[in-house]
Image 1 (cartoon, rainbow, N blue to C red):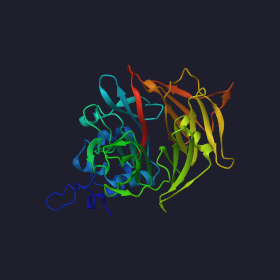
Image 2 (image 1 turned 60 degrees about the vertical axis):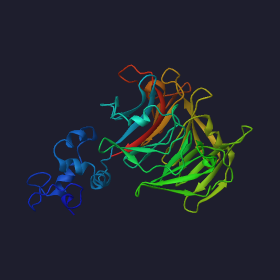
Image 3 (image 1 turned 45 degrees about the vertical axis):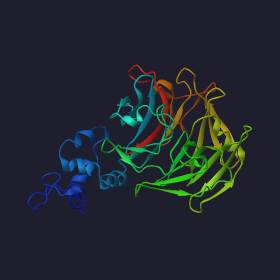
Image 4 (image 1 turned 60 degrees about the horizontal axis):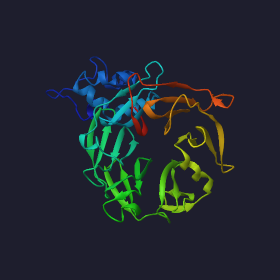
Length: 357
């Protein structure tokens, strides 16, 4: 089916179909345009309303994905001392690698604290939070990376701040935190992106002290910490809405940020010299890969993965890139590449996410 038959803006004039590119069938035009690198998409959106509608359509993303043309960029939410919350984007291509400020976030979010930030599909979601003027909030804002536009999404069923969240299979899962109601820490809310709607479920966990959610192999790994400081873990299966306890060694992921690369969990152990560890599922233990130089980045850090590379993003947007297959050790230090922003930066990192288009 031609794009002009199913996109949001058909640009039909006097009943005649207007081609994307004059003289070419739309199917061929889309294949040509889909090959344009992502860093030029903002220019394509300016050509015409029809091209802008194409770049925001699911058909565009389908062709980019089907033909292995998707490019993944990194989105970082920061807190600046004076300017409040800011969002930066990074094109990881070494030829164009630099942090850039994206369209200002909605003013209600600029001074918020305690937000949770997750990515689903081509959108970045800012969830809940609080400020010195207001207690826990239920509002949700989303940034559409393909349209470079902020919008309002459906509000959460439970107002909360300083809570845990994770994205898995087109859904957001949130729990714990502080809220206006006493039941907020014990509630379990799920967001469906396809319908922009929330549902609240009966709390599936036997214990309510969850402090971290990790999406791993189609399930959610829940990390808990009891009142006496003891850490333990469990697995929540969304298909059956059931939870079970698992080996507690994985609960050591509370010692630093984590990221999943091709189904394997990695952690940056920040309390013992910036060591990168890999979770060995068969042996049920963490295995050390190597150390990062303390001169490259400063904790607390955040981790994201693109392909087989792990990006370690620390304070002031200092960034280290580690290829998990090719990283070699020299006297215990991993060989990696690093870079810093090309502007003065005193920002504290709140979250890191990736979006592929």
